[in-house]
Image (cartoon, rainbow, N blue to C red; front, side, top):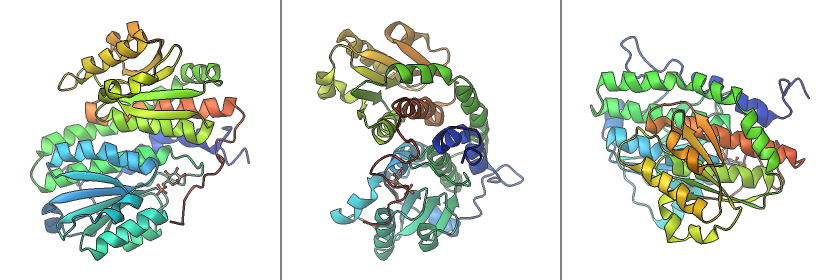
Length: 372
Ligand code: G6P
């Protein structure tokens, strides 16, 4: 009913708008009096966690893209190697696992059969298992050694939005916690990153408050047959998530590519009028990723692409080469997915609604897939 949807047209829209709250709830109560991270729900002995030699993240769908974002942050903060794999692929490749392997599953429902079977397999092989999950008491956390609950509140729409941001947030917490345990991060560094995380909800809110620009573009693009998404570093999984949302909701052919891969293939797809979304890295990041991605925007634009960029406030370099720029507030480069994902969700939701589709119940999809 309309009341259940809190005045929004769909649960998806409601859940997109609940994201500031969701991220806040995921962050709530995770530190002790000294400002050090304390993840009380983790039931694994800290000594054991400290000795983790490798992390394998397992998930499906949107949760797997959250896992890909997590890899960048966890490796950077902990120096523990992180593999990310689709749960249904994992078991069948004879993965290398022992007691020092930490298998992190990510699942909104905690009931996805592919993910559950992969967790069971990892346990049988001797791994420690930790579940990042939104549903209290669900099967995956019950069968895991440890759990980090999202506390994002129930998610009704089939396409995941607030749970995705909460999963990314929880993965950052896990990375920071492991970095703390291993002495890899100083308390001051952790406090700085946590302060930036705590500033994310109001930044998401400012994106939501300026959603009309995104919705207008979506309405004008309702007849588009194909959309490409480019991203680099943490923007790469964001690009894939943006593409997934369009496939799921609007039934539009959409692909996300690593921007650096453009010249190795995808650029052949560019023809006059092809819409290309580009998730632009922070101009303040290390390396020269920003200028490399700006070059990619120029390359596709020169071949006729209609370029739509998601860029940090104050990033003036992209303006000249973008038909439309969606600005997001500044944050540290690793945290950007918590912001850059939001315009892509709003875009897919508005475009699907414009086409008259049921955004909460897309055809052929289920909220949680409990068969293999
Ligand atoms: C289904 C849903 C997706 C979701 C995936 C994983 O395919 O349609 O939206 O991302 O399952 O779900 P989980 O509950 O494990 O996060």
